[in-house]
Image (cartoon, rainbow, N blue to C red; front, top):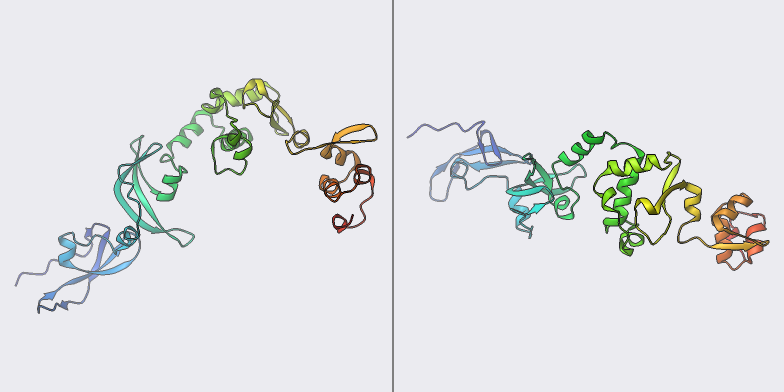
Length: 282
């Protein structure tokens, strides 16, 4: 009888052998040696030495579990700068959910593991080198201006953004000069009166984000210029509801609630607030 080869510490596919397990007698009367293994996903399983060595078993079954439920094979597909390889594995995330991760090769030649959902949704498009490059290029990725720039792109190009229907959904885009290079936007902002107390505003609300159509205004002015605002005339003066609220030192929602309930404009603006339940009275 040949000596038993110790497989402890060896790796077969995603399985690392921990120690020898009990022998089993098959239905044919043969004695088979089994080994206790740990899968890369963290699970422990018992596998026969024969199946380990001939490659019939390469994991605890986690990958086959997902594939058997109609998982889309992403092998060879490209998402952004990432090309998906044939390797994948099932992992338990911090939230406790089991997800499929694919091994990808980035255009920068670095390999990385990415959640399948992040690949197909476009959330992850590189190994992280793009963000790193942007940060190293201008060192401004943590600034307020950079957030304004990224939010602007989300409104115009991300159909999942809550504001998309008011921007990209209406055909509003960002000029190539700003869209492709944050430093161009950064330089324009600082040359045209930007400060941390101001917000970006399009002069023509139906126009695009571009130098000739944008300026910096206060947050209050921004509220007064929204498409939902309504100009109200009172005592021969015409202001938006937000402006009247400021003049009368009341919350804009108070005036809006009164108008919706059928109050006349004079009372809606001038009448003192009686109680928190006022909006239910007419």
